[in-house]
Amino acid sequence: MEKRVYNFSPGPAMLPLPVLEEAQRDLLALPGVGMSILEISHRSKEFTQIIEQAEANLRRLLAIPDNYRVLFLQGGAQMQFAMVPMNFLRGSDKAADYILTGTWGKKASGEAKTQGKVRVAWDGQETNYDRVPEQAQLDLDPKAAYVHFTSNETIQGVQFPTEPDTGNVPLVCDASSDFLCRPVPIERYGILYACAQKNAGPAGVTVVIIRDDLLAKTPHDLPSMLNYKLLAEAKSLFNTPPVFAIYMVKLVTDWLLAEIGGLAKMLELNQQKVQLLYDAIDRCEGFYDIHAAPDSRSLMNVAFRLANADLDAPFLEQAAQRGLANLKGHRSVGGCRASIYNAMPIEGVQTLADFMLEFCDQRK
Image (tube, rainbow, N blue to C red; front, side, top):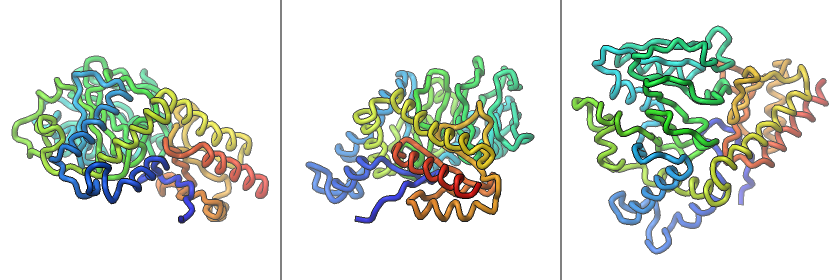
């Protein structure tokens, strides 16, 4: 069998090895079904059991209250950038507040501007999006249609330690790159959405958790596939859903519950993993530089630069030789980036930390 590398890609990202092994075993024929998950009908009782179990797992992991729906949709987070304002901003005399902490927040606000009025409640552009705002820095409108923020910016490597307080205004969150990495108080959100390909499964499905009272506000003149209320009434089966991707979400959430022990335990593991990298960088004082300010550092994405940019190429080349893959940073930030999502084992992060220390010692 081909040897697996440690994949630090920002997404699609690593999946837990036990999940891949189970999917591999069942790919030709699901137990008791006699056909592949790639072949079964989305209307079959077998798939009904899969999607219902995936939802039940998410409800258990996140303690989702009964007055929230869980939807499995398509189009990725970028479809949600448009769907949220289409459902809750289009035709309104209100504006929506957007907190801009990086690339994805900016993209979300850009899509919202096609549907209605947008206010920027905070913009981190002045410091190249190296931090998230404190509550006192937010210029929030108490009459806003909603407040949108990105809980973790994959490219810049900054993460909100807690949710912004928006009072009675619905809070909308793009949680794509830190979904299921830690416990979340869902009751503080109006909508929380996340594409799966970081922490929850493969590309192709987006999880949307939405409060019931918001569903009642959706316009009647939207295309059916963009109307949250219709999609919720159809229980994510308005059209053929991404069957395999939902099956994989079910397996990943099974793993989180049975093998990890829930999100509180997952948070502890993620904190241990990321600290290995931050400690290695701190030990090489002046050799590596983390993009994010200390109080905004992400658990999931560590964006860093080598002080000498000429060393980027040999660093990445030697890392690849060690089986440390996809460490190149995004062009807008430069340098390197280690994405250490839930499925990255601590051994992979330790291997990277050891390599960084060794590379530093050799080049200083």
